[in-house]
Length: 68
Figure (cartoon, rainbow, N blue to C red):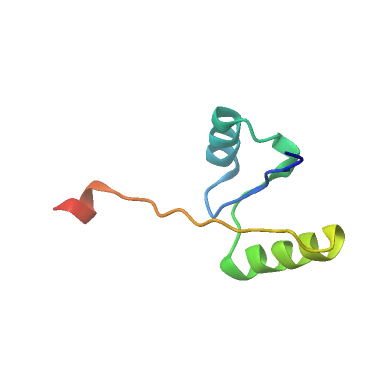
């Protein structure tokens, strides 16, 4: 399909790389310890670099405390 997947996360580098490896994302396409503003900047840079066609998907973390 010609899709390149990037991962931006607020998690640390070790966690980010482990998740990326598990789901098949190339290590050079992983940004860790990102703030929301940092993520927005990277998305804007990718849009400029690729001329559009960029999508962002968010995932929420659920911890046991949310279910207590």
